[in-house]
Amino acid sequence: MSSYVQPLFGIPLYRNTRPELEGLTERVSNLEYERMAVGNGDISTTKWLLEQESFQDLRSLIMEEMNIFTHYLLHMDPQKIQWRLQNSWAVRHNKGDWSQAHHHTNSVFSGVYYVRTNENSGNIVFTRTHDTVSTTTFDFPYTNFNELNSKSFGITPQTGEIVMFPSHLMHSVDPNNSDQIRYAVAFNFVPTGTWGEGEHEISL
Ligand SMILES: [Fe+2]
Image (cartoon, rainbow, N blue to C red):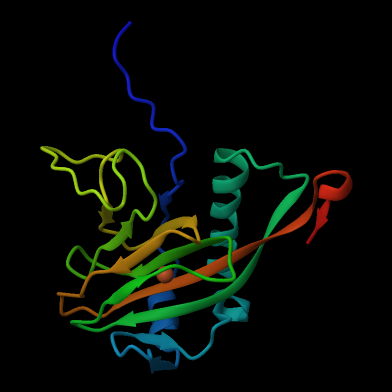
């Protein structure tokens, strides 16, 4: 038997890159923004962006990707559980802007669609908060890092890329070191449907 390590009970991080939607950067850049309370980025004044008529193409794209993620790849029963888009908002990062580590509350799955980004406009960095090979308090020395032993994992998103993940997953965004303004749309999902039996049945 050859040696093998099974990555057990992993956190699903979904990624896909789709063709850019026509005129989306202009539509997102024309939104009204306010400075975030922390003072490190701008957020659209609307927190229900994808309800707007002019963003239905992006909403459809996100719903398609969410169904692939949860129904096809995670094998959730499409007859019993669907997903309702909740809050959605745009984020504008000028040069030097960044996002502190956070997770999304009152949500089950969250995601980000990258409207305009480049390799220097800030990685999204996911952070491990649960124990895996090492505990969260022990800091073992490693000669190499992979998905089994890392405490954080950063990705450099491309324009047109969508990432989705359980809302409890901590993430931050590195500073925008480019001269180009970075735009992204973030969103939250909650489940709807009826599943379970007897005293465990739930309808949402
Ligand atoms: Fe976030």
